Structure formats: structure tokens, C-alpha cells
Length: 344
Image 1 (cartoon, rainbow, N blue to C red):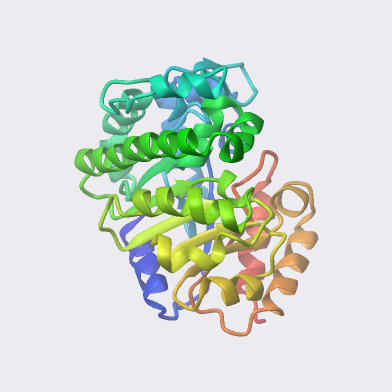
Image 2 (tube, rainbow, N blue to C red):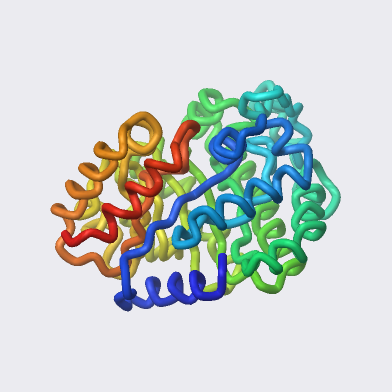
């Protein structure tokens, strides 16, 4: 993000009104390669292609806050790779992390990986270091430390079904596994900050915490997420959890996140009531059916409908109710900007 954009983000967190309502979009390998005109594998494997795509999008849409900005990632393989999962990379399909644990009995051998040496993490850091000069020459800085969350990563180690069932059948092992993964994430976030002092925000992405009920959330999700969000003392702490479910929102203050990207299935007023007045809401346009599959008119209508449901638009970052899906066109992004800028 540019300095002026980051200043706007800080003002948003403080509850100040900006000159115009901002638009921010979480972008990564599911969307950016196709928009740029390359394959997913080419984007992930080649520094110059990755950099060119990210430079192009910030130049073509200079008023959009792209989050986290210049994200050096390898899809869902990024963090699980440090635990030894087999990563499958196809030419133009999402990377896939295969489970590395065949049963809960095997979780006892899992230890905290070294984020400086293990899996794909050194490559993610080196990509940013190799490209840092060009990123800064374009007027941007590396602002966020980023990681998938504890339950998300744990589910890739065991498989989602096995992991979720194990919260009830193997509760002690589940807590031990989540503690191990949380300590790894804490190290990983701190190491990113160590490598890039310009980092003043963190972004944690975990959809699995929205899959459990209040009891399991309190027992398993709340402790590990609180641990992760205490990793860095930074002014912006963003959670991406776009699973259908309201259990996450009301824990914002307790867990420690102050910026929340949630499912488009829940309207802004509903999340505001649960999360509280101090949390920046990041949403809330349907990503797949409207931004990805709709027309510019559909996008405009969705923004108008969302505006009509929220009386106080302080601490609101207009966005998709989730990450950017494949197929979102430049025309739809421009329509989004225009609709947000138009009078309510």
C-alpha cells in the first residue's frame, strides 16, 4: 500500500471520516494471474511475472486499496508446506495441499516448524526481498504480515472432515495440535515483521473457525486465535473469515482483531451489531455471483442495496464479502468504485 493509503487505513481504524469512502479488495493467486493474462503456475513460480502483475493492478486502479498488497504466497500450500505436506501445482489450477496425517494418532509427532527454513516460507520471504526495491519504487511498501489461521492449517494437515470430527472425538489432541500450529504462526508473523520493518498490520485468514458452534469456538478457536493476534503489536489486525456463520463476529474484542472481512451472506448492520462499533467492517458485496459473475449494473445495484442497510458508515471498507474470485473484470471493479463514490 502507498503511504497515503496506509494513512487512510489508520484513520479508518480510528473511526475518522475519509474524504471519500474507500474500496479495498483482498487479491491473490485465484484472481490476479487470470486478470493479468498468465497462468497460476507462471504467476507463482516466476518473480518477474508476479511483480509485473502486482505492479499493473495497483497502477490501473490507483484508488483501490489492494490487500494485503504484493502478497508473496503459494495458495493454500504456503503455510502447510512447512509441516511437510505434499504440494501439487498445476499449470492453471489452484495449488493443492495433500493431508500429511492419516489419523489423529499421528498428530503426536508434529512439532513447530522453523519458518526461516521450512517449506515454501523462505521462498515467500525471498520473493519480497528480491522485489522490495521495485515495490518501493512504485510508491508502495510491504504493510502486512500474513498467515492462514490455526484451524485452517490444521485442517490441511488432517483433512477438513477428520479435523472437525476430531474436535469432539480427540479434544486433547486437537488442543495440542492447535497450540503447535499457533506457535508456528506466531513465529511466522514475527519473522515477517523482522524481515520487513515497514509491516504495521497483520492479516490472518481462517474460514474453519466459522464452521463450528459456540461451544467448540470457545474451547478451540478462541484461545488459538487470541494467541495469534497477540503476535504483533500493530495498529491494524485483520481477520478474513467468510464462512457462513455469526459466531466469529462477537469475539472481535476478546480475540484482538479490529478489521473484519466476513461472508456476504450477512448484512453490514448484522455484523456491526455483533462485532461492535470499534471494528472496521470489510465487505460486503457477493464476490462470486456479483463481482465475478455479474454485470457492472449488478455491482452498482449490490452497492446501493448495501448502503441502504447501514446508517453509520464510519469504519467501513467497501469490499467483497470474501477474497476476489476468478473472473472479476476491470469493468466490474470500476463499477464498484463508482457506486461507492456516488451519493447514497
